[in-house]
Image (cartoon, rainbow over all chains, first blue to last red; front, top):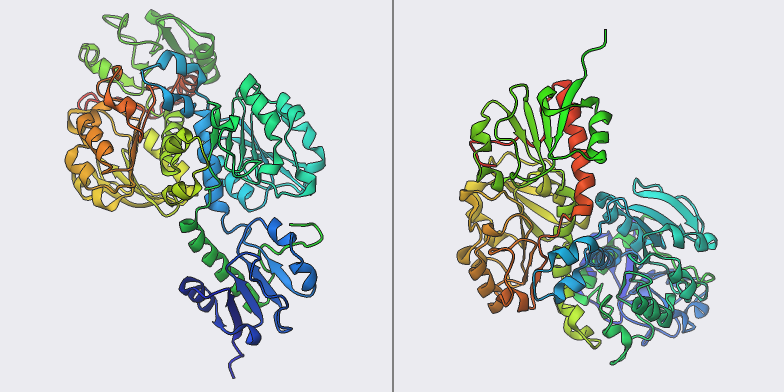
Length: 311
Length: 311
């Protein structure tokens, strides 16, 4: 007798890609009332007010789940396990972070503006990630992927995470717990912010932190705009306290027309496009296939949301 | 009885860094007339007309040695082994190549010009190196280092080298011999030129090759300007036949004021600064230390110049 197949629903509407991912992982597609899990390919609007009692697990389509915490979806379903898409989009976002960091270190923004062969002027400004110290704040999916990308470049990573549990990686020279974050600023060449947005991480980088960095330091934010005090960053960029900033997220977001960041020559602003839809769909389907296979096998799910911690 | 130390001269003048590299490698510094090898920390101008008969090996300070082939230094010293600095600067140049390629794929040039939040417009233009095919033409020092950098990004490398001898690397899906180069153009997403400048490689990329690439393809040249037909490249960039070009070297070089490449929005031109002096000195000393240790031990030297092949 073969075991009953695990039934999984997809909402708000089904897609062929997700359907294939689910069946490939050994489950079958089902209506919500008949399912043990729900893969939700949308935002909070339209999410069922009360899920059927048979639902044990819900997979959400989003890496950052603040907007879900603005609803009462988790409170309404205390017995259901929710997973985010954290990690699914990590590779694309880490690639974007590296693109901005390398562009900064290699002085590409100014070189792109040049209309003449300014070799003697640019020579001393060309930096390298080789032997450079890069603080990676947040060692979840994105931070972890980024460390893999930095390793062959010869960068030395200071990893910062909540627990301080050492990250075992050839490129990591030290893991610092978040409560000792204040120690890293004078010791690092560059900073990449890859931590979740929580009340604790709001304005994690402000005037005081920026003042301890180097005139060649680049600050990259591919997490959430709220982690950096924008006004302090604008001042540091204007004054040359730091080398530059690469921002895929901003506060406010969208960044309004006429905001000073648009005109600063040492700021790279990309409009939260590190994880564009055409790359996202495929990555989410891979994530779903992995988690469905785990669910079918009764193993621990990836990216389980910690409702108490708020992420 | 300890063996006689290996005596090595440095010219045109000594530097502390090179002196330390030589002694660290187990040799001693000597005057030219008393030495078995010469480390030449300069260009062809001022190179000795006739080296003492005791000299067996000369280490030159340059990765590309065309300017030395424009002299008769090699003919004048047929019994001496010459080594270049090929490989010494490979890491810095490979890092620069990656910076330009990622900037292109992530659409940074246009995003840097933006003065408003153009997310919907930029979304579809954001590419990724994940699962992208990158042809690396030339698998010497720079090409080899670049393959190491591309691997964790998930790129699939088509390696092109003279012999076609397979490059064993997890990221390399195929090694193509140079005489079959014409096969790669329709099959690759991006191209990085890292081959030496020889009569054979002149205008390796021209109108015909560019026409077979994709509108999203980036062409990166960190080797020598002569490898690309600049006029054909300008046409392809203007017409959008390809996505863009990242050029650290140009033909002519320096690129003159008013050249169309300066104004093309999809061209990144850096003035041959992928290997700036402050990064070069240290890398050359490391290269010298390695080669001196090899010379002392009687092992094969790195980057031996093949006078017949012209590189």
